[in-house]
Length: 490
Image (cartoon, rainbow, N blue to C red; front, side, top):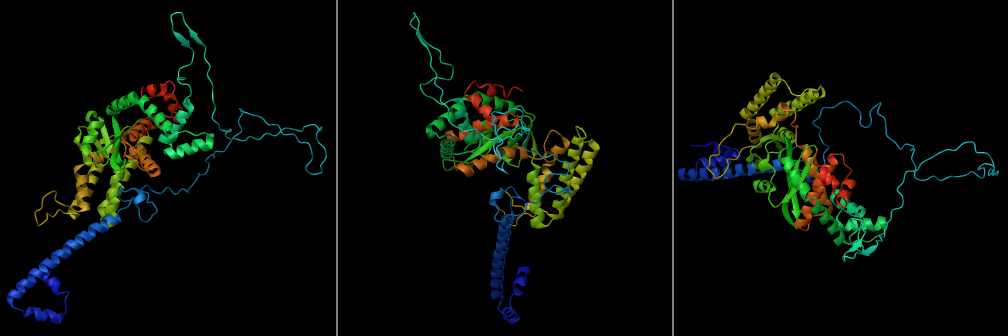
């Protein structure tokens, strides 16, 4: 009996050879059947592996969560937003910005006309017709200023030696709060490494400063922010909606993880050797959190007893991959539906609405269910013939469809609850610069240095989100620490 596999194999060989094979004894026929079966099984496995590798090569930053730096060939980004028809750049009627004359100036330089540039006539004593003003914005010459403090010393009859030095002037020679805050600003906000920071100080201020001093300034800021960090974690654990994210972080040549928790006004960062639940438990925000956690589909977040909202930006990229790689129409239909719901929500917010009507929500949920069911029918689950240990492998379209089916409430939460964002981009923006830090400086050489950076960066970005001047916020750490004490009171 010729099986389907054998028939396919026979179709690949010449007619003369087929005739000779058909005349072989029955035992030889069975042996041939076995060889063909093994041969075609191996081809099936190879074809499946080729398909998996092609899928991996097809992924880029546009259709998956891969960062743009991993794209082998740069492609023009495909925007999911509908075209407005407007040209790039400033629109008609837009008022441009330029330097304007100021009523307050720091210095006035008078320029006198003494000789006519045309006929060389002496105009030194001629009456001035009018004075024309021009202003130049520039940075004054930068230099290190040294202030010497001299205090009277009086010994009281009780034996006490009294001095009148102000608070903060504690040593024979020391650096002041301006240069300390400048160093922390350059390293923890502008992401400069130690070597480039010392070069900048030498080039701009004509002053040499040791790396040990840089470390001491950052350590002092870290210590000053201990109570700030504890209050920040406490407030975030009580927030209504928070975004959570994590990214790889190299410390002393080993892979660690940087975890973040963000709201519109607050940011918290923590470094940990683990990515999952152990790290989240030890950080201490999620175990107490009862609000809505916005995140990607990292399963560790679902270990916590709170409501969840999935990042639709991640899902849109996954859908684009299915659309491009598998050419399945349901993926395009889901993309359009999610973007339509986002547009409806934005219009409702612009009108001052606080929610979408129940009827409208149910209408679009039915459309959502219909598209998902259509996709599931197109991608039925076929259990493997051989029983293997572990989770049964499914195709990428089937896996994504099951996520849309099982996590429908979390995916559509942004549409049903207006305080929930469409995506987790606000958290990803907060964590993105951490990758830039590693590209500029490489890995952290110690866990302590990474902890300095994480805590100070939490303070800096929280101040920035609340429109507080970052330099002033850092300077406050080395004076009265007033901003750190009041930043979380609103």
